Length: 104
Length: 286
Image (tube, each protein chain N blue to C red):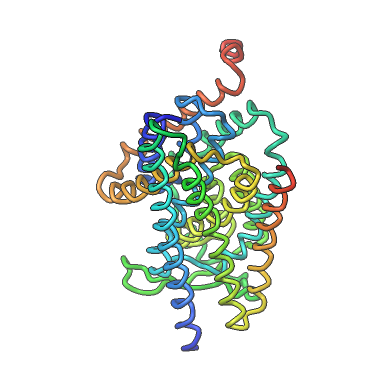
């Protein structure tokens, strides 16, 4: 019983750390890209737009990483029932990406 | 895209997100109407920008709920199979639905939000204490959360899972179609079907929003439907606004603010209907 009360705290603090760091990272990249595009736009065609796109990409990737992290933790805990659930969510998101690429 | 536009997008998203955050709502519900009605941004670009800001806000606000043990992560990942399946359906439908229909559906969602804001939310877990006979044992979802007001852990059970999954599928579908977090549809799913304590359902729903949104945002992103000069300032403004909104929530949340929001939501709904059908249609029924 004591093992079960410790585990959820561990998974939750790992997820919290990932989402926190990821949000800051993506926000800083977008902010950097925006500042670049604001300062360069009068002098040349070089803009920060590609950097902003990278920042947006990090935001899109962040929840996917969160699901991968949960899948890994469930596998380590030999909680195969929930590992399958996490894998299904991951497959569904991948299907969305595949649809996006095919429809391009 | 010039300096003014970027700053305008940033400021508007900050405002919309702060406003949403004050009442514990997602920012997307304000961002799409503001971008389309006032910013004259194409509705599909607005939806693409909004879905990124939805991810940003959900990820940015998840940590305190997780650390406070309010988020039920096992329930979240299970319900996400339904929300992401709904989002996938939404992605497939999105291209085939005309813009005027999107405006109309959005108007309806705004009206439902206004109605929900008017009706006070009861804590469903308290109302259902006597009906705890049906257990969700096969999934081991029942848990407990620390309640600061009571000073102890409160145990709760997850009920009517199939109905909850069905409602979550619809929430995911609407999220992908309109670029919103669909909190407005997750609330009934959490309250009437699963009967979770309010704090647990808010935290869990917020946690799920980012993964639901990623299922559609991923597709829109690789398809090239997300316009960086619009989505960038909007996402950044939303994150900052969400932080401010959460602070303001503590100080000025009261009945008057609630009523103001009901009026704002209803007014936006009318404008979305006008955008959907054109002014002639509105004159026709008036």
